[in-house]
Image (cartoon, rainbow, N blue to C red; front, side, top):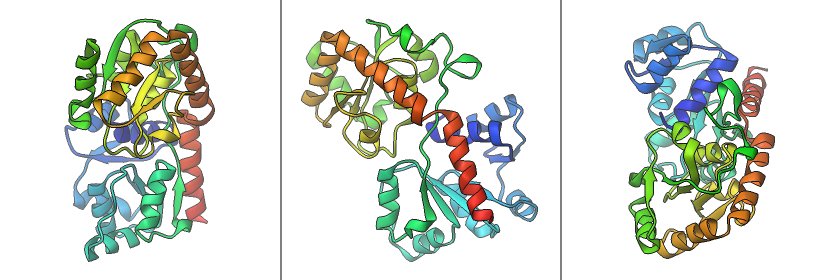
Length: 289
């Protein structure tokens, strides 16, 4: 599952509610496994449920469109992506119909403002990630479990367009593509997250929570969590810049450890699941007044 699916599921687990998701999808299966009330997403079922619910919360573009057509009393839409809102009449109608928007970062909030969404209808609620324990990352105990060596993980090549691989060839190091991030972080020494567009980067937050140092692209909302030289390293989207950042993390392990420790503290203070749920519930209560 992607970051948006995990955020929706963690919210439902703690705040309650009913999930509509495509039948058989990873989110549908995981929600059922965890005991969340879940139904296949169909427009007919959505219309029926809208009649007996106070708030509909859409977590992606397709559900946003379906929810607008179902005419809920209150519609909250999570906006997680950094690309511009389309300017055609249908898109303007769709975006005007929502009661409130939850932007995953200040960068995404600015994208919505540029689309003429009123500031009073936008609240920034960042992703929340587990910090450890029964709901957290298996085998990770936090900062004290920092590993001075380990595999170099890289995010999906479809996002980084081969830039990370080019940097790795330049350095003569091996990268391991993430398959299951929470599992793969257990033996990671570095997480390289390269993207051309990013709302925030919940995968980066998950690595930070696990005590793994991070190199990330200097794009979108990523600089809001990767403070260059403090909680990680930012790189421009070219192989040379990425290689230089990876090399610094590998050659200066005390620096990498210090970044990882500061990043872990930042996640504890600002990006826990509990904070995400609390701030989302504040939005719900505000629009119900």
